[in-house]
Length: 387
Image (cartoon, rainbow, N blue to C red; front, side, top):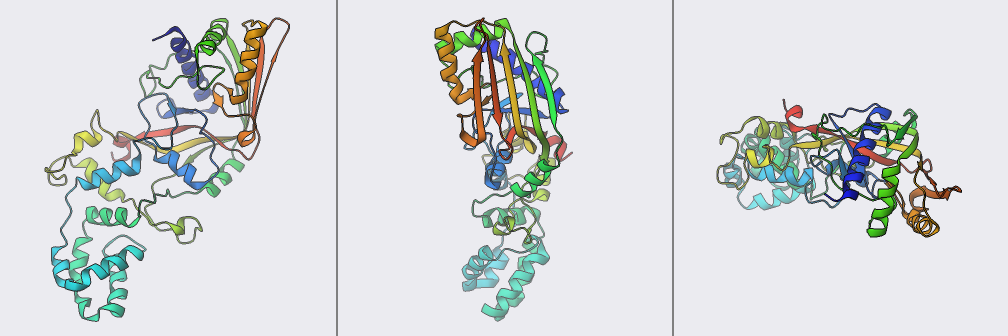
């Protein structure tokens, strides 16, 4: 690892420890989010963050398009489970089978169980196929199995995956959230993260003055970390906000009523707690180990996000910079300073930097109220969810 990467890893680990202590979080679950995509103003943005599967690291660069996400993993797992075939029902329905499928997708049940599905079928049969009303018996046999229920729910969502809370609920939680403040000194703050849930793993390192980095910024960042940095962090409102995959219809919510429930915890619990081929299809390319094992793609999920609104971060450096270096730093400030990178003026963000007569800088990054930022996530191992 290069000297600048070592320096920034140490600084990131120190910031992680300072934030855990300052915000009263658990180092056995908290993961720091970094990068320019941390603002959340819509339900979909928030759901994307819940959907991202956290890597094994104390920090993560949030990418809403990351390849490993919960909804995709859930679908892969369902495809590897054994479902009860609907051959008896399909045989009973005959030519009406396709018509029923089209109707069922457009009119999902209020409750995804045998009773809920039977209610939808009976309404359909009464109008479109009274002669097929008796087929409900074969249909309900299918939906006794939670795996069948889960597969139908997932397909009925049409790749629109909501969570059971919306941005309105987050804003309500933030409005009543406490204020938090803490200080940070890189010369005294511990960088030991070996005792955390990630066992010391750190990834995605940025320079202090530039999100993109570069040779000039490497040199400037190295100078700053060597001399020491002090930071004061002030958060007007902080909330740890929990949500789960959308599993039960909420027709009273104006946002969620537009989505179909897609997640079935009973099927997921069965998949996690039963490793053998009574649940898993031995012919499928995915098995328990590849999904949940030590190298599996779904070892944990986001159970909550840590969000702040009204942020002020002041950073001071003991290093001295000449006029040329000052110009480079000032130019870099247009994108914000580590650990918050955001173009000045974007999302209510403002960053200013000043130098004293010794060439030492002070930067201040502010994000006005009304621009909530995700500081990190609470990750929960699958072993805890289905223990």
